[in-house]
Amino acid sequence: MRKKIVSIFVGYQSFENHYASDFFETPENIDMLVWHNVKSSALEKLPKNIETQQLPSFDYQGKTDFLRYLKAKSTLRYNDKAQRNKKHLLYRVSPGKSTFKKKLKFGLISFLSKFYASKKGIEKLENTFFKQTRTSNYYKECLAYLTANMPDLVYCSHQVSSLSLAPVLAARDLGIPVVSFIHSWDNLPKGNKMLKADYYFVWSDYMKEEMTTYYPDEVQQNNIFVTGTPQFTFYTKSEYLIPKELFYKAYNLPTDKKLLCFSGNFTSIGMDDPLYLKDLAEAVKAYNQRSTEQYHVILRANPADYNEGFKPVLVQYKDVITEVIPTWNHDDFPLPESYTVNSNLGVLYSTLQYSEAIFNIGSTMALDAILLGKPAFYCRYRQEDGHQDFNIERLYQFVHFKTFDKHPKAVFQVRKSAEFLEVLQDFDTLEQQNSAERLEWAKSIAKHPLDKVSERMYHAFQNLLN
Image (cartoon, rainbow, N blue to C red; front, side, top):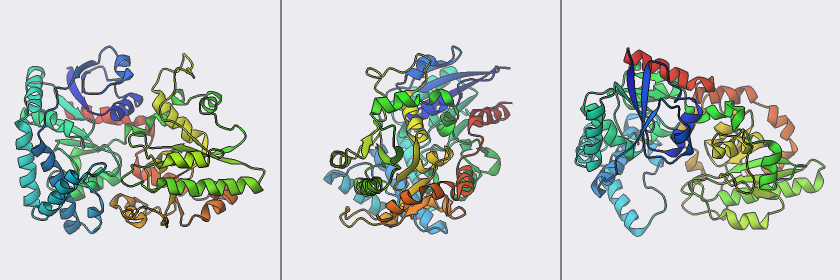
């Protein structure tokens, strides 16, 4: 008997990751409709049996947004009371750059959250939040669409986005089972799980344990499936790797030097990134002057949140740093006709594959590098001229970094600027050092094999549908 799944995609990156993992290569007994708000050329490449439908227009009110952040802040406060780790409030719930109006809004949220930091308080906020969402036209149109189509199951690919809430609420109100994927490795301790589902797909056994720890009244062991994440599957596919000669030519990279990647973080936690990049560049200059072996730094800034502070550093150190723009220039450097996959993922893959190592400040990109067999280095020292409201040690106290408790040597720590030069001098040794522990840490975060994620997802779907 044929079954129908509606899959919700509210983010371009999530959709592309699922596409790369062959998620849309469905079993014969499953019909799938992609319910989305994404703009991607991959939509046109979906198998012919996959239907697509645009999500309705989004019309949440300011009150809904306020409740969302109040619930998140209250959850962080409650988690600090309920959990052994008391660092949850280190996560900020305010988005992006602050204006006076935003500071006022989130100051009020911080104050009010003290009165809701309990199970009952959070439940009250959640019920009010859901009730408010149900008053939106967005919810009503989602409800009408699902009523007319009545799938056997709804899959939500991104549980943090507010765009996901209304369609998931509508599905559950109609009694349609909902499976939600936990989008990122740090989502659960951040307290920003937007919605409730009947079943969950998680990255690892570690994340499954987190689910039962943070949501003991909502989940049981048998409604959590360890599938891994589609985020890294494309690293296992050679068709995503841009030919080395073309990649070097497109970005004007020196072919006679070894590449070191510096990856930028979101500006809210990476405000001092340009200073660390400058320290790395100084070390490379000093090393290159005294060694026949030469290094060159490539900068991959955060594609969603560019740090303007990089610009003067790029000018000052143009002889040792080249920026690799995350978006491929198709006009000047056309890809081979055989290259038909997402070139943005290709740029990321190629950047890491052609680099010897990666340096950053607490970024998930360390995991990407390690999955490709590259050593990763976290900068972990205070900048004398850094921003006053940035604390490097505060960053590394984030709860999701407790994954290093069992694997403390998985990522190297650069504790002072002078250590960059030491890293370069001892790189051949460091490259081999702790390689087994690096891989064990990576496997504890994302279930392996990486290219079997969709297979595990569909195995779970089949169990739920039969």
